Length: 112
Image 1 (cartoon, one colour):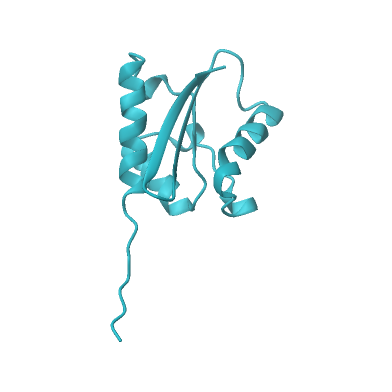
Image 2: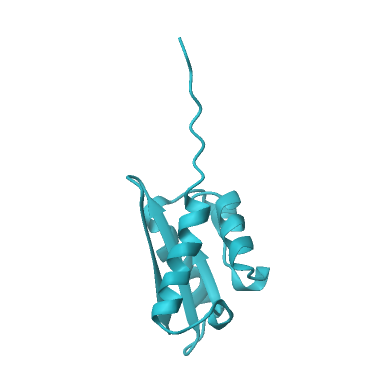
């Protein structure tokens, strides 16, 4: 019996591409992002997205260490945490990027 190992490498590529497309459409740049909340599938992917976009640690929010992969709820949970803790304030630009099963992905820019 042959066994194959599938290495999922598309999320770290597609999330930044999607965000850059959104930023370009909005006539903004990565420097305009106040906080990025990436889909919390695993920390390695979040760190790869952060590295690709060259964002400092203070501009990226991760909570996967506390909750694990909460799938479709990961960005809403993280957003709630950021709002409750005062990490996000009115007027700031929030960037979110997610991916899911079936090779789906997307991003959003939200001015609070």
